[in-house]
Every structure is written in structure tokens, then in C-alpha cells.
Length: 226
Image 1 (cartoon, rainbow, N blue to C red):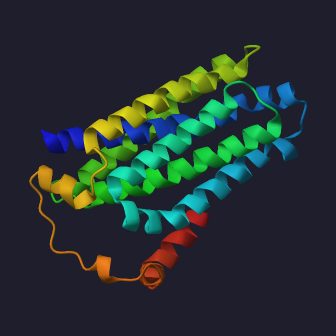
Image 2: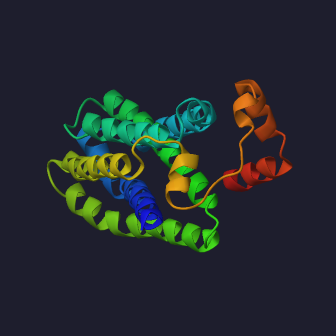
């Protein structure tokens, strides 16, 4: 039962990530019209989101090593919520750009932590990874319908109130499900005991060096970029 709660919580987290990623496209015409900007300027939303995501991906290793899974994933969820709260009142466009950076930063933490956690499961790991990513797809499929509705409304930014409500539920679910604990402790609660870890003895700089030493990382990075 505990394992199922943990898995469902992460599926909900990734579902909301899909909702986020499926929302921006339908809202672009409304954003351009509302701020009276062209495509080259509105594209800064994607740039800032990418910068936030890459920054979070780089810091994730360090933060996870210091704070553990339970705290790191909640930090990501709160960062995502902050971004939505910044955007919902339809602020000046530069504030919206910063808000998208917060969203990207938060999503990168949650994405890395959720995938890493499920990949560590011994029972039906590949199936559960598939289900979790299907939850992302469901969110990305369903959110454009709501975003399209709001794009035709005078206050299109109210769509981010809906996303903020989902983000609040995400923060609450992650706190209740994982209670800020480290991954090994959470897995042990579900009956899966990890072997003794030696990573605590590895300096932070060497952790990055160790990760970048895997050739598969370089190939997967190139594949993702293409």
C-alpha cells in the first residue's frame, strides 16, 4: 500500500508537469496580443524556461546529496508554484519571463527526482516508468483544451490560477506521501531495502565528474538535444 501511494503521488506530480507543458502553446496568441509583442519577444518564455530547467538539472545532484529526495522534490514543486503565482495576475512581461524560469527550475527537480525514484524500484520498474510517463502525456493532452478556452477570454492569465491550484495540491501530496525523507528511507518503508551507499564519501565535485564520465550520458544528451 505504501509503495502504491508513493507511485501515485509521483504520477500526479508528472501529470501536472504535462499540464504545464501543454498549456503555453495555445496561450501564445493571447500573450502576444495582451502584451503587444511579436514572436521573437514571446519566445523569451521558452528561453527562460530552458535556463531555469538546465540550472535546476545542474543543481539537482548537489541539492539531492545535501537534502535528500523528499526535500528536493518539494523544493521543485514550490518553485513551480511560485512561477504560477507570479504569472496569474498578468504582470509586466519581464516578470512573466522570470516566472517561467521558476517553473522550469521546479520542473527539473521534480522530473529528475521522480524518474530516479521510480527507476530505483525493483518491482515492475519499466512498467511503472511507462505508466508515469503516460500520466505526463495525459496532462499534456488534456491541458490544451482548458488553455484554449482561457486564450479566448479577456483574462487569459487566469489559466495560471488553475495551474497554481494543481501545483498546491502537488506540494501537499508530495509532503504527505514522502514527508521530506531520503529515498532509501522511503523505499524501506515500502519493503525495499537498499545496499549500503558509498556516495556520501564522494566529494560533490567528484559526483559531477562521475556522472559525466559515463559515455551513455553524452549519447543520451545528444539524443535529447536532437
